[in-house]
Length: 205
Ligand SMILES: [Zn+2]
Image 1 (cartoon, rainbow, N blue to C red):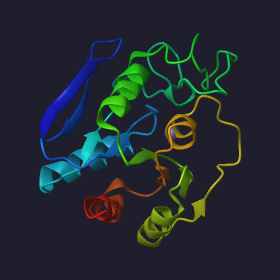
Image 2 (image 1 turned 180 degrees about the vertical axis):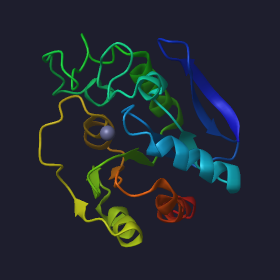
Image 3 (image 1 turned 30 degrees about the vertical axis):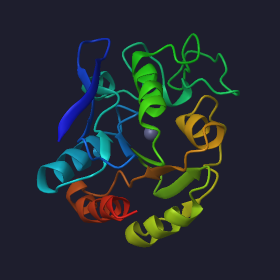
């Protein structure tokens, strides 16, 4: 796969969008949260071993992975930094949404990609809740994903998420957006098959 777009994190790590000329407009994103590294491994493993027509951002938050923190190097939770109607200035804890909406380079990168590539489905990989959560019109595909990985479908994650990517993408931009919460206690090797099968489902969507 080729690097279609790239930017750099605060600490100088590359953040890339991978795909090809004939990629479908289906986008898979790993590692919003640096302490949830599973997505990067699973995406990189998949694209090494499969021809893919999907678009991938294997790791949105490389600085967070390197420091094993939820937030990026500025202490911002990227999944609270999107320019939504419900974005709010919060306390500076691990859910800090930034000084302003889309203050972070990682957020701007993703906003620009959505604007340019207009994905028709987006899958984001998180941990640890073992649910298939969604925003926008994604119930149908979530039921298929649920059957593959055996986690329940949950329309609501159960706590407020101002400035979240799902609100930005799924609710405000009407792109069916799936938040797959992987089981962090499951050995990563055991996640390869179900997650590959979910990617295959998207390849044929
Ligand atoms: Zn997460």
